[in-house]
Length: 255
Image (cartoon, rainbow, N blue to C red; front, top):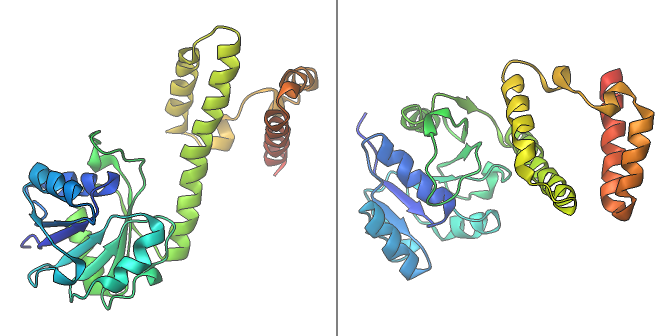
């Protein structure tokens, strides 16, 4: 398969990693567009791309146009794109139908990506969706050279997976933030928790989360639970969170 001509719309986190992904296969993207001219110039120079001056001037030889932009502008930008190329957005929670283009698709990376920080792309799961089989096969062929873990799911299934990712990553990170503040109050570094986190991560690779659940909630250690809830009374929100998490853990054990 000849590598298609690709345009990247956007210059942020996902756009940067898309360019890196294509580079990792030995094939570069061809074009970049951003409403921020300075950002477009910097991005183009970093990845040796040609700059598209406006969305209604996407070159005729462009095969795929990736919308690597914020969720709330996907639909409006889609309407500005007048091309026969396949238009693909990269959002986990936005429906395929947000795109108005005749040929449309989604490629969502299940990973928290930050511009300038490399990632091991072959380990990142990807969810792909298209409105026709030939474009689905095209995206599958391209990204199978990048990732060893590709799934084909519709918009509703992808939204559920994205919700799971938010709980797994964003919510747990906020819990780490709360834990860090509790430790800081008694002069202890959050690094004390790293062995605990690493061991839990090691175990979860080979067991379901419910199988490795430990702690006072699942043991129904009411004395410890009461003491910790009292400790958290200085912050009612944290206390309420502790109570509901304890309840959910205990109910899950009984399921």
